[in-house]
Amino acid sequence: MDREEFEELLGDLGRGETVEIDLMDSQNPVVQKIHEMNRALEEESRVASNILNKSLESASRAFLTR
Image (cartoon, rainbow, N blue to C red; front, top):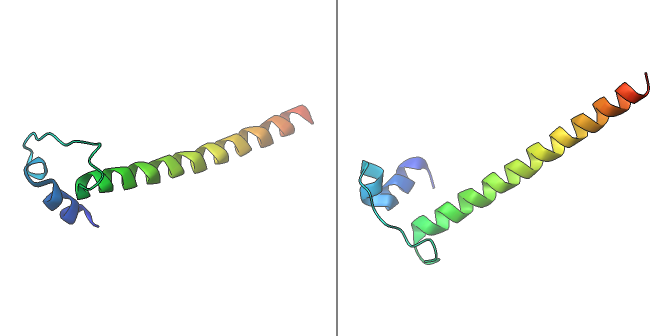
């Protein structure tokens, strides 16, 4: 689903209007997309954290071996 399709699903919200969305309604395609995007962000965060941790470990080892 691209941004345009997502905004179309959001309806009024996509046009800048305020709407209420029940985030517990797992049948709502907007809620499904929000959860999908959240899972993707969580995975990206885990990957970035792992990269940062490995870089810090490497830097620490380099510093300690001097």
